[in-house]
Every structure is written in structure tokens, then in C-alpha cells.
Length: 240
Ligand code: ADP
Ligand code: ASP
Ligand code: MG
Image (tube, rainbow, N blue to C red; front, top):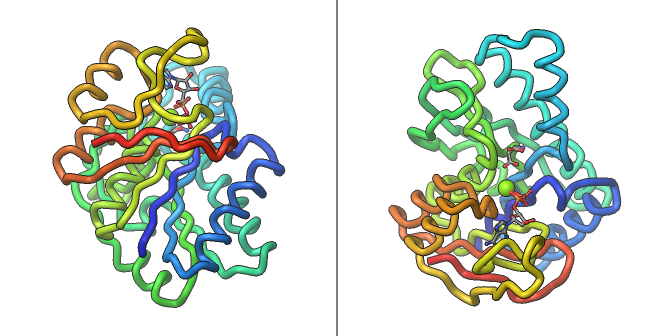
């Protein structure tokens, strides 16, 4: 069983939440699953980094912005890997480039062109949990790119496709996909299952719970995405 799990920023907000994610990941690995984890930057880190950059240069280069923003996910990957290590399980962190995520050179909104997962496969074969920094890849020149806001979801689906994963789980701060934003509308209804096209039209109408390209990729590759709460243990929503 090969499982890809993605953890969003709120799900990794502080040390306690990182430890909780690491506990779940370690439990799965101890049961014999091979686990690839995709992480976002902690909390509002990406917003803070953007504010910092704008203070320095309102019109900074998109290439430098990507190099800077990608660090948020790399810091998360390091911390989650160390947290898994603290539970006594072997784990390794990889940047997008190390994970073989090749993109075009549209800095700030790069598209994944192909995934070369050999390094991930080698680490899995050595019995490690592999923690990949989401939201980033590398272009043909070897420069760091980012995939657009919310792009870690797309990293997870692309890796699930490339690795032939049995499951692709997106852990977030709500327990699934609702007909409306459950934070704004407490009476919103959760979908047990939702089709790709309906999910895409929800996103078009502002539901940023999943990155649009992650759903397009899942549809094109025939992958089901499970959207789950990192906190509740409730059943969640299956997209696809
Ligand atoms: P993450 O950091 O885990 O990637 P996001 O903030 O990108 O999380 O997405 C989760 C958020 O999406 C929820 O906190 C919720 O407020 C918002 N959201 C908007 N519309 C919906 C919807 N229809 N169903 C579920 N969540 C939604
Ligand atoms: N950290 C990035 C963002 O805030 C990517 C992501 O969370 O998926 O947009
Ligand atoms: Mg998101």
C-alpha cells in the first residue's frame, strides 16, 4: 500500500500540530504502508514572506520571489521529517527539485510538465517516509519555480499519479468539501463524494479548498482525492 498524504498550512501551524501529523504518518508507516508526505508552509508563512518581499522591492523579479517563497515549504518539510524522526521512524525531506518535479518556467504559476520519481522510490525502498516540500518544482534551467497559491495540492496529486499511489489524502482544516464555505455558512452541507466537474465549478465559484489544477490532474489521471480534517478523524469527502 502506497499512500500520499498532503498537510496544509493550518494543519502544521505549530509544534503540536506538526507532532500530531507526524504521529499519524508514523502510525501508518508502522502498519506497513509506504508513505509520501507533501507539506505546505506553516500557517500564514507564505503571506508573511510575500509581505517581506514587497517591503524590499515592490517589483522584485519573479525568479527571486519563487526562490524565496519555496523556502516556506522547505522549512515545513524539515520540521515534519524531524518530528517523524522523534517518533523513531526513518524519514527524509526532499525539495520539489529533489523529488523530480519538473515544471515550465512560468515563475509564480508554473505548470508541472513531468515527474521523475526515482529519488522518492529509492528512499521508499530503503524503508523511509519521504517528506516532499509542496508548491514547488524546477524548470529546465534548474531554477526553482512555484505552482501558484494553493499549489501543494497539485504536488500531491502529481506524485500520487507518478508513483501509482493507492490513496491520495489531502489533510486540511475542514472535514471535507461542502456546498459552501463551512467557515462562513455553518449550515453548509458536506459531500460524501463529489465528481471532478462539480468540484471544479465549486472552485471556480471561490471554494479554495483544493487547487484547481490538482482536480484537473486527478480527473485526467483517474485519481480519487480524499479531503480530510487533520484534527477530527471524521470521514471527509472523496473527489472523483
Ligand atoms: P490548506 O491550508 O489545508 O491547503 P485551504 O485554506 O487552502 O487549506 O483550504 C481549506 C479552506 O477552504 C477551509 O478552511 C474553508 O474555509 C475553505 N473553503 C472554501 N470553500 C469551501 C468549501 N466549499 N468546502 C470546504 N472548504 C471550503
Ligand atoms: N504555501 C502555499 C500557499 O500558501 C502553497 C499551499 O499552501 O498549497 O499558497
Ligand atoms: Mg490549500
